[in-house]
Image 1: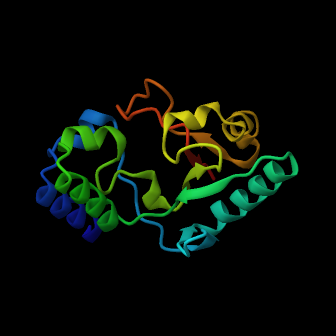
Image 2: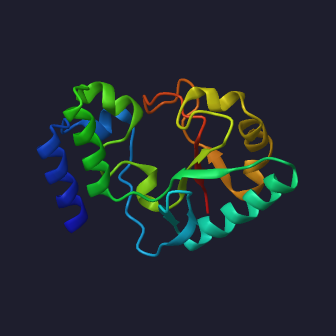
Amino acid sequence: MAYQNLIIELHQKIGIPTDYAEQRNLSLQIEATELIAVETNAVGKTFRATPETTLAWKNMQTAATNDGVILQIGSAFRSAIYQAQIIEDRMAQGRTLDDILKGIAAPGYSEHHTGQAIDVITTDSTPFSEHFESTPAFAWLQKNAGQFGFRLSYPRGNKFGFVYEPWHWFYVK
């Protein structure tokens, strides 16, 4: 119940409508409690995920590398509080809440909270852009990610109303 109260408080602070989840067909995503380091990027940021997701990611990343495809992490676990900070930062830059919520879930409703979502980046594409779909990495993921338990969460026209995110992959236990 404490988590749900936190989500309500964050939503009220940001101005997220009370019927947000219902309108978007979203379920509350509980924050993972057991997280381990998956990968550290070139600037020293460490990404964390659940142990199961980490193992599946490492196996998938190795298989991709063996096929000549480089997969890197651009984002993994995010707390609800951090999710709220991202939204507030974008609002401070002048973006509207409606616009922001097309590309990022409200706190409490992001798959990143579970520690099972990974945003994949690669050296031959701008991070977090639709251009990712034209890369060898995306083609490889489309063909192979399912074998490692990962699925594309937000295809074009998804039922949640999010923009197409070819970089966002969710590990299904």
